[in-house]
Length: 346
Image (cartoon, rainbow, N blue to C red; front, side, top):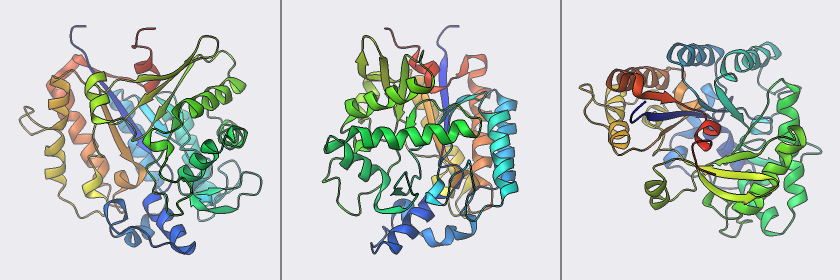
């Protein structure tokens, strides 16, 4: 097909509102949570602290109907509230079982399933599950800076073990955008691009423990610079390679979450949709990127799709994708990150 428009849908943070839990835990640790950006009105998200089954089912049906492919995060130890292969505090066993069933049966066949490490909030001790007073990426960055790669391997290995215990085969790793409230990373955060080679080596080694034939993996996060993205047309870039083990790529989203303005359920839904793609299909962030030959790596989150129990983010996604499909027709091809990686010449 001539001039395909490549698209990849990212869904992160499932099954929690990480913006709420991370700041609640920071407060408990004695830190002052950020009250801007994702921290704006974070306390109001308490009533939507977990993803609803109805939202997940609607998303899964939407992905089926539109042949959507991409990457879907499942947190092995969401907010450190327990393990999804055991129990999660605040979620009924029935809720957790139904959530995992939908992911296994409807979402996993179309999406690369990644952990966002273990908690996507404060770090934990893998052996005990006890919370540490450091955000997770800051703690792992500190371990990498200290040369403690075996500790990082153990951390990732637990993520792989838990996801496989619930019938999911993880592939790739998501690095969440977290602040270093404790300062333990000393300004060198893995989600800002530091320690990419070390982390890539650990990631591929862990994946190969469970799938020995694996020859590639990827890191998804906020670390790609605008220059990198322009040069790569937002496709994956090789960040580490070993002739025997394989390759690891990095992939970043095309801009911010389009449903972020709807996080609290009282945003302007029409305006947010139009930012992505206009009603006449001629303008918008997605159109501009597609016309420049960029892959449309679109990031969303459990909490923005839910949008404070209004479902506004799901409405945005449904209408924006409908417009995108109307403009590009059969040229629009949805891919997983792994499929995008395979487009990069060896």
